[in-house]
Image (tube, rainbow, N blue to C red; front, side, top):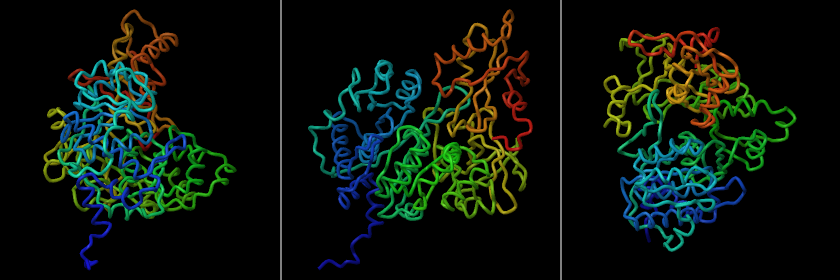
Length: 527
């Protein structure tokens, strides 16, 4: 009889599977009929069904000669196929890049080409995909979900002929998210060695056989992808997708579906808190065990209100697509250190540097620099100059500013003025200026983020006109309409100011921080 002590534990089994991208296969074997994904329309897939599709997709990729190191781009909303494709790339060796499907055709095509995608998975609701395909000559496999797309093969028909049993030779895949710089096009954050989350991490977050996950944010965004989708896949928890934000629907789903784990951003907190008391009273939330939040700073009064409502179940993180040590802080810790994003990590160093590169003492703000892990961590894909530009020795910065207190807790006081965070979404103003400057009346533009009570920041264009043009409401509207033709809606300025001059450095560069400063006067927390 086999010695039971020699059998691997579930934790060991999951860790071994994660190392080759086969975690979903373990859950399919242990809980084949358990729901893995619930779509916004209520339809669902089991773990066995998701796993079978992942195996079929892997065999389809291999039929096209695709394997380790090849890239796949997915342009898709919150639906089960997103999870299936993610599971397939994890075991097929492919590198997945999720793309914001609200971008313009040119912006999507740029990312598809830059990441060197040979597979493009797109959703029929995204009308620009035929235009994207026309600009993406290197894509060899095009799969359409949710209906037909010109030039694409139907997803279900494409995988139908293939065997759904577990592939015998899985190869761990990779992931590359795109993050914009302050100038130029967005860049892929590339790691040669894919990080693998140990199953013990899910236990620390309170996952068990009764856990149920909610994804209320966009699947293509790094945080929902990590904390909702990948977490549910790793922990074997059902994942409930919502398609768009509706405060009462979110609260009702949390309550009625007994959601235990979810990721939110501060604007979502504010919208939930803004619901009438009688609406909140209808939906018990005492079963929620873990709410993780980050992506944008959270006003202390908002976080206090959420902890009072949901209990001390909030866990805040501070990190970026680039990686680094990462900060976390529990509700209990945060109540002792309101406004902090966590204590100095033990493994990798974090430094606060002044403009000359000197370390700042406690309480003095400076640029936040994170130590790269052994081996170098990440590079910006095909951009050595950008990779080098954000580094000081073995440390890199995401452009944030903050300080450590005397107890080694980090507080954010601001960030590089080039970046706007509106509702938890990064917006890079140079991209907007690049379009505004094309208008015949515009001599120069400096787009900045200005305070907004709900969104944190709102996009404002500050415009210097060419000689012969006079400021007017009509001209402002004309310039904004011009921008709307070239930019996705979330990047279009919500307001526009005309100025007689723009502050410049000795080198002639517009000093965006000086343009921004007057709008933030009286705000002590310039974030």
